[in-house]
Image (cartoon, rainbow, N blue to C red):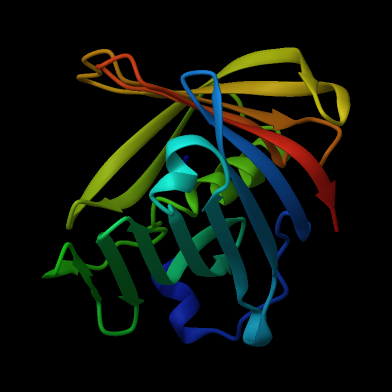
Length: 233
């Protein structure tokens, strides 16, 4: 449902960087209150100081099962100081007879970002700290764990362009989940022209700030709700 690297790091050795702890999480996904899919998310270290965030959503019930919804999303990240930055990103979605793919690669040394979206290629000027849409949750988890509150701002590649996404930390709530009652920080995306669209996320205060719930409301009334059912290392 859906979240940097400073130029100076290109000339100095990579240091051990703090990062959100590895986790394995499973979620139920509903559409307008009707169960539709299950999602699995894994976050953990890779070789060379890199980290990987991967998710798989599979249509298990209702219309999502009928049309065979299958979505895979994978982000490879590196850490600059206290901030993540995307190195490589891939997205694929299949449903019935249609499919979508997106990808991007970040070349900090070469000063550019390249990728494809809906069979159209793009090239952008590199910006430190750039993220793909999947990796925003890692950045949010990291900033919340570091005690940051108020408005949080990220540079994100979206629709073949660089954009600024802003989020506001609303405050702490008690969230009812399959894991029991959980303390959670509620975060809302700030949109300049929302037109009825909203994105709200809840991060577990006592669960390493892993996303516990993600809700997306669309202008046409569609409501996609993703809720955690299992959490492990």
